[in-house]
Image 1 (cartoon, rainbow, N blue to C red):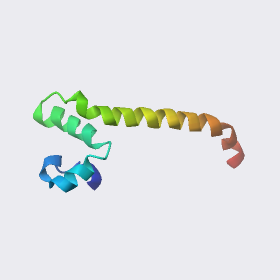
Image 2 (image 1 turned 180 degrees about the vertical axis):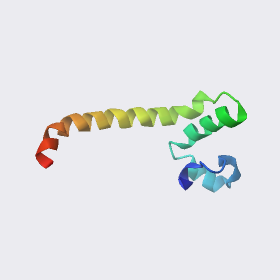
Image 3 (image 1 turned 135 degrees about the vertical axis):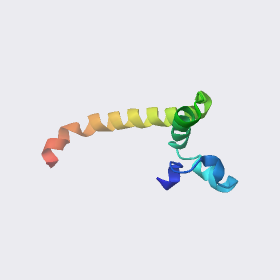
Image 4 (image 1 turned 180 degrees about the horizontal axis):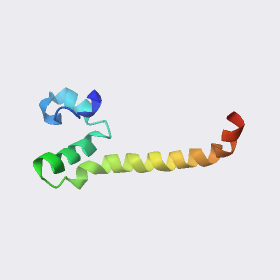
Length: 77
């Protein structure tokens, strides 16, 4: 929770910490949610592209992994 700027805005941190926090893929999603709910602004889609790309890659790799090992689930239980 502290690595995702949920309880504090990202622009309060110093620039070095802000660069590290921006590596977290949830940071743009939380900022977009904050923009809509608190400030009433439309979020920038360009800031969300890294999070969208990481989400798609993780979804596809998780789906492939699941379908490779799903037949061994009953054997392990």
